[in-house]
Length: 471
Image (spheres, rainbow, N blue to C red):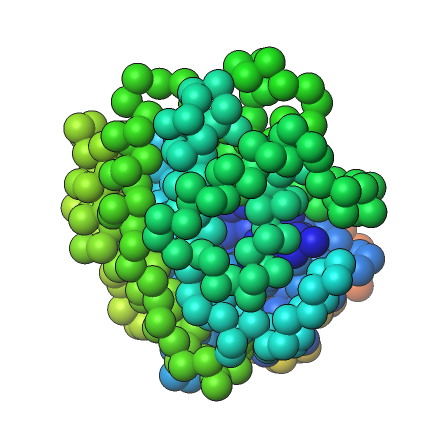
């Protein structure tokens, strides 16, 4: 069963977006680049080091990105950065998880159905056939409906304020069955009574889809981000079919009311537009990540408004950067994040190399070797460290000036092994310090005293260190 547009391709949680999966990290590398699907799929497979099912993997990422408004394209079809997510990701990497946790609570409150990226296809669920839900259903908020029903169950009895898997299936089925027309304020009393009847008599139709319980992992994964919900059935003395319930807190009703009252606004959109309409997706992203709206939400929600939380501080200090800075800035962001990510060293280095290579060669088919100045297809050029990476400090590893393009036809290895150095911008012969042969001498003679195209004020300190290390 489809649960009101929640992507069934991966868990929506901080770890997926900013941690081990780091899907937002990949989206960051695309800022300023045109959305050309074939190119993005290739970049995606390289970033995640995926050799198989390349297209499928990108499809999973973009599905989550669309649902969360992260695929924001400007009028030239280029990826735009989202400063709020940049800052949340940076805090996450430094083990400050509070901003991401609060933000996922905000996303739960903004979850709406139909969603702007809901497809226009008909929907078939058990005996239900819905014609074009995107066009024919009024927008509502599934999370707020869940909270309202659980609140009503709590009022009946605090020990009743939960859903089993069967009951949660029924709730979604019932809403779909009524073409979502029953999702109205004050209807939660009827829904809660129906839940209690199911609890007493069961729901026969559930048996036919009982084996589909695995699909519950996606809505459950999203709902687990809530600060007012728990998936711990022990609190309610419920068997393994327990799904989700209210946390047993003295202020739970006040907390739920504040969430409901602060989150009624929805994003209304032209239903005739495609789910992939560029302006629609752009506008939805702006709506979702509007700083003032998020501040208002934080100030209205009782579980957060009393705290000097770090998401509030982030919102007060957001910075945009203009298009002229975007290429350099996105590399700096990525390298800063990478230095903090808890990855095994070889994966960490591989990703770092990907980011630096993107900086040097992104969008190019042909490039020039910094040593011999000859032009080659990009695949013949290495992302060469001017100062050996093993000798770089953490700060130097994050400096985009520490790398240059060098051809695989000789210059990359000759420079790495110290057969040539760069002195005041000129290529210098260093063969007296090395073991050599006539072919190597002949090659070096051709490039000796040429200008190094990557020698400048920002790189000269690294060339100087390379020269000193090989003197």
